[in-house]
Length: 373
Image (cartoon, rainbow, N blue to C red):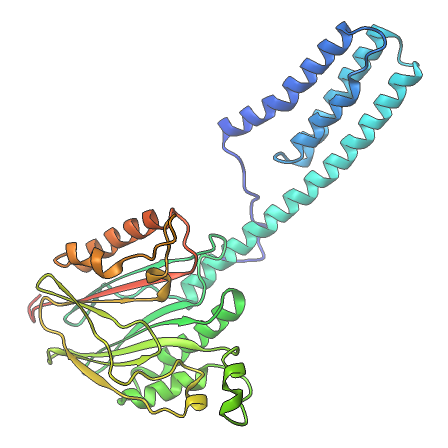
């Protein structure tokens, strides 16, 4: 998609547009009739100004100018009926109505231009999402994979949450993460981590060294001189991440948790958090905390499902400000395959949050299949 192409401005539905257009025209008719029938000392012509002003809030400049012209014509009819076009009072009303219509038409032009800009940004965001956040494969060796990304900002389509997968000679590596903050800075950090993962996931056999490459991809700013500056340093960029290595021929998963919510293992109707004994700090903060990367191993057998998620899931709130109970919900769906599981989770999460998430949310479900599956 070429972002330089003119993006169409958002349009109202045909039925909705007709209903809205009926409002200024009905106003013009009502004011005109009542003004003609009113006593000589009563003048309702100034109310016609509302017609082009209202139209400018939802229609384009051409329709706004047309409504303004109709309003001027209606005021002229009132002037001829009640006195004459040369009547000073009606002349001032007509002049004022013409000026207001011109101003309203200009603001309708500005609004339409802004809508075109927003539509263009939305199309660019779609293109960026397809390049930066590529869809995960449905199958990778003995694994069945499904993923869902829910952006908090509808116009953005994506934010700082990220995920990726890569095949290696011995298995599959997966990454899920969450860049601090929102907007372009978070997207920039997410793209850097994704780029480092895609470049090194197949080439680097050791997870700790892979984490080192991801760490190098995060611009954490100037390092503090001592630990007393660490609190201020945490205002800089960092990314929480979870990196998994799932061998094809071993019933296990090796993972490194860099300050990310722990994955959940669904097995025999149970939901088991894979908490690491020594989690690493988020990417971008390891130099501050002087910690070492620890790889931990957990069982992951045929029929097991791993759920990876970002904190936008568990921090989603309902109308009573209660957090989303992810583990409780998963208990009822522990036997579902990844696509079905994520479909139910997405619907339930959106219903819990009232259709609007406070933060981006990403979900990845991985099931180990039998060797011939």
